[in-house]
Image (cartoon, rainbow, N blue to C red):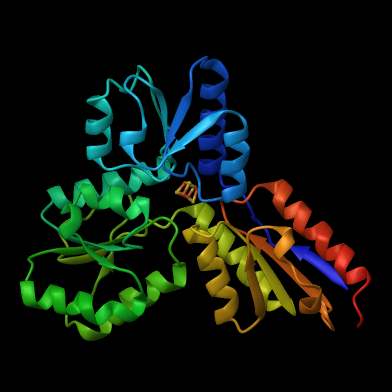
Length: 310
Ligand code: SF4
């Protein structure tokens, strides 16, 4: 019996940085430190930070005037900065922005496309904070969002009915690479004009239909590492927060490849019978899963399988 952890499983640099910022700020600050929203989508990480005295506020109303505040990795709409500003919480003063630079890059791409006359469609999860933050730079709540490649007909309808002069598709950083490709392929099959790739450098903004590959590299690496392990395992355990978009994509990928897979948040959810008769066990984890959690799960599997009936 072999247990193998997928390449690149666990924390990405954006999540690591956000946690470092929150910890550093809380350590220096003698008053209470607030984080607006879930800093990263992992319940255990949040619990640990709460243990260090950090307060997580779900609404800006819960943050007091002048409070030292940290913004999560997923990026915020401009309204968040305005509302915090009204409470005298501002950048360079008491506001610490942990937005991942790769999310800021997507915001900049959205702004540039919009300013170049494109109607921008977002491939993402409507309620995800990143999609909300990116939409702010487009049409706010009116931004056209496609959540699944199977919804391509809705996008095609939207494009043809409105007869837009220029259309571009961008993606949330944590979506499925294959899903995005499938969406563009589906749209291209239905439309006479073909969507061509616009490079991230934003050169070639004259084309009528385009898409920009804004899925971040750490997400791509986690997806390919998971695919690799799913192909060679009898069972895959995916560790990630319940709200973690990139972890859910890893789980979906394993299921799509037909391998028995289980999505868990901690080792306590493992069940001994899952491993009965299994020779090759794969473990993977989303970008917001800490190493200690991966190690804990591997250890638990080892314990369980040493006493499991073959
Ligand atoms: S998943 Fe990508 S965009 Fe999100 S925090 Fe990590 S590196 Fe940044």
